[in-house]
Length: 505
Ligand SMILES: Cc1cc2nc3c(=O)[nH]c(=O)nc-3n(C[C@H](O)[C@H](O)[C@H](O)COP(=O)(O)OP(=O)(O)OC[C@H]3O[C@@H](n4cnc5c(N)ncnc54)[C@H](O)[C@@H]3O)c2cc1C
Image 1 (spheres, rainbow, N blue to C red):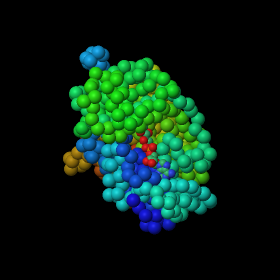
Image 2: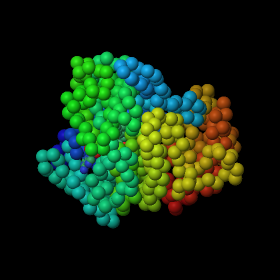
Image 3: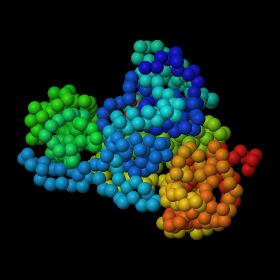
Image 4: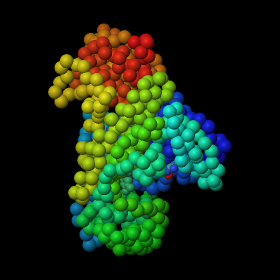
């Protein structure tokens, strides 16, 4: 546990909460050289399996963060659902739909990784990059003025101190104390008044190759038991059709519930590692920027667990905000760049919330490829500059996710576009004969595909298939910012991101 004496008195960004959102943001800022401090009021990372579905788009983000290998080693794929009746498994159903990987989309399956392990992996990477989490240290209150935020930070032993930051990010979960202090309202609803119980439990008597299910989600008092790949326990999810139920989360209560609702006997039920209960909600904040304070993750939107979207949407909030804070704090980009966080992410949150609420109400626990978040983008947002005279109908547009494409270097070494994009920089991608002046440095790297002096050869045509020809500025979070036939509009574009000063344009 950090002593408040060892906390810095001033940081660029103070992040409240070391859940998946706070850690992702802390990690992204650390690799950008932004001085950030993550506060976590608990004295350790949160236990529990909770959000275990890592969607393909989040896998791409994790690849960029340098944690995808660890995620794959620690995770696995979801098994089919096995439906039990009268002590027999009567049928099987595919729960998670996969798509085949393609040159443009290398990951096609949702991975299963317990949230506690996800947090460990992100935390390890954050510290490797020089970032800091102060455990056992909560944000108690804050004020903001024109230049920054002043936060009162308190340890469990009651010692307190003030930390000043240029910006504060609330990654403090669905009950977000920061959101409440700002008076930002959540618009939404309880998607169902029925409580749910979650627990991680060791048990015998079930195979680990099925998502075992007794009863029907949302239709009966169901129970499901899912074994996370590579771990020696099961995740219990149980629903209660009586809205007045207060689930018993004690170890005995958890074991009794399983013994009542399944064919498993008490002697087969072992240690309860973690348990919790909640009522599914669907709501989002009316705004996610208030001056120098931003809301991200569950602090900005809470989901039903149906569809496996909450954690993924949270990580992607962090991914959208991280580079914008980096450009403003370290490279003098205009403050208006930070307004685009809300403009881009609120519509995404609204659309994803609508999907998870619909799935919850339908009782559909299946997770289809429409939930992979690969199609999330910002083509109607304020940063999308589409200048090509003839982009193909239905083809890539500015604001879309920048696809991957396997290529080779002129000496024949395989190299993917994602290898070129990986890191905190922008990429200036020139496909075909379009001429661009090379911009290579900390902030931008240039990659010419084809043309007279290529960096990469599009030997199988995957880049042209995905992008067509032209000049593309790929943002650090892997979206196409600028798409044009030539580089004429590029200087203006680079000024808005703080990559070029207006004077140098
Ligand atoms: C049953 C269930 C299943 C789910 N399944 C999925 C799934 O398959 N896929 C998916 O994407 N999502 C899923 N989710 C959702 C996912 O768990 C959440 O969306 C995710 O945890 C949100 O992360 P967060 O970092 O925003 O908030 P949290 O994880 O809630 O973290 C907030 C952190 O802030 C800390 N904190 C709070 N106040 C303060 C303070 N004042 N000072 C310092 N620290 C503070 C808390 O201690 C906590 O550690 C599921 C959730 C549930 C309940």
